[in-house]
Length: 252
Image (cartoon, rainbow, N blue to C red; front, side):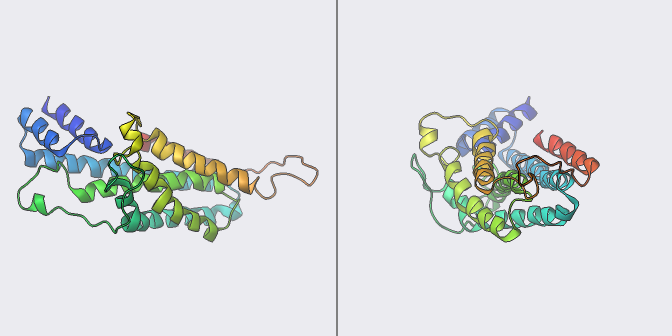
């Protein structure tokens, strides 16, 4: 029973919908010390974050296996670079845009995020989990949204224009839309429910990918001059299959 309550506590923290005081009260009601709940919730953030981060390997393998051999290196580079950019932009701008100062509005504040776990260090575990673990968990989802776009842009755009778009997506587009629900913004006030990031992660990434695909058109060499479709076999079906299984694992 205590384990179930702790899992629910972690899930509530995950969705950013439960107050810190309620987290502590739930832990105490289950007979679990606030410090123990704090540690387990933090561990849950990190474990699930590691799984989502491992999905980056899945995206890279899937895309590398489905593009032509000449594009494999470029696609791997894009997936590594976008993850690095996502971490930097979410630290510099994104996290505070998403979570601080929304209060039913449209946008948070432009400020560099810095972890504040001083209360826990002093023995106050009312926050329910470590702030740095929450940042890490949210950051890997930012990178996931960008990875969705990467697959659509494969063999359609050069590396540097794509990475410039990733800066905008991970630093501004994703955090602002995320603030509308997870940050307590106007969608939250309307009672909107986002299940497992279906809108704030997958839909945002999907719409961005759709716009990019429409603007850039088909991949070079996909059609002949008279409009006939040409086959474009991928570099490695086993590699794409491996990426699929990695993503399958990560979703759970």
